[in-house]
Structures are given as C-alpha cells and as structure tokens.
Length: 69
Image 1 (cartoon, rainbow, N blue to C red):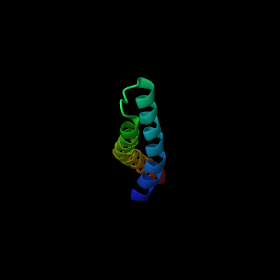
Image 2: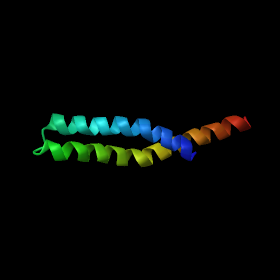
Image 3: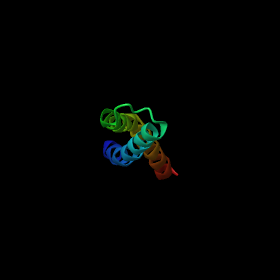
Image 4: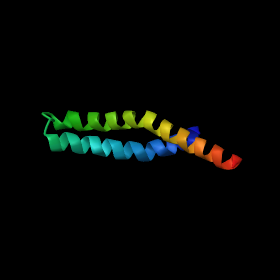
C-alpha cells in the first residue's frame, strides 16, 4: 500500500500545490510573491500526504473485497 500511496502523492501533490498557488495568486494575498508561492506549493504537497494515504487505503480495501467475492 505504501508504493501506491507514493504514486498517488506525486500526482495529488502536484494538483493540490497547483491549486494552492492559483488560490494565492487569484486572491491577491501575496504581498511578497517570491515567498508566498513556494510556501503555497509546500503546503499543497504536505496536505496531499494524508490524502494520498486515505486514497491508497480505499484502493487496498476495494482490492481486498473484490478478491473475496
């Protein structure tokens, strides 16, 4: 499950980081964009870690139930 979680994290982290950067730029809350943009990207990747674990756990549960049936 850990390998699946890492693969999901790579894809989900990119999407969440991009969304966070877009939100920072669209909201205009970045008084110093050279500092705010990397922080938004980092926050996106960190937030994606537990989300990717939850998605990987759901995939593992689905695989386990399909093997039994």
